[in-house]
Image (cartoon, rainbow over all chains, first blue to last red):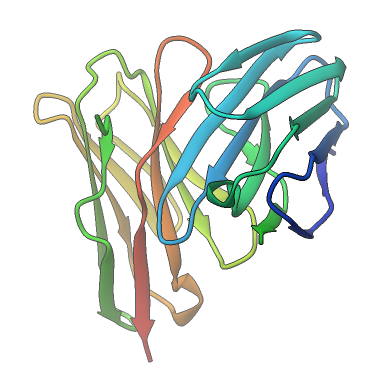
Length: 111
Length: 111
């Protein structure tokens, strides 16, 4: 069966510090991968999606970036965090248009 | 510009009654619609989906109705249970690869 992992589960970082969130998927090949952010009291905002290794599409311009170094690994990064980067970050995968599976999420607090 | 709208931020329903969650969209190119349930500090869980070529899909207590002419879909939960209390997200897939999520509706099922 397929599983999706995200870490860390929670993170507190000062403004201006770098960020690296990792997501890995098991049990499937060549999935589409996604990074979402849920800000407090708001819906899910698609940040990046990837249809293959090295292929990243950005939905929202910001100081975040994503990379896909391996087929089932998706990384969200920032060189310098802003206060507005605080939120709940979710990784997801899909292999068909009927469903999309989410990881457990990372709660990021920028202080 | 919000392409997927859930105009009710919250809904309260008595246990055993029907819960109806509504979703409106603006992009006629959406070809698949999904409903997710999310508990606090967890990733969303897929509930049910519907293709744009159908007008109804049923799975146990959950039924999704699609009215393409009105660009409207709804999720019916019958009978509602206290464990259904969560935030429900409507999502739509465009004919490409990514999904667009609504802001969510918080459902409270009262015992």
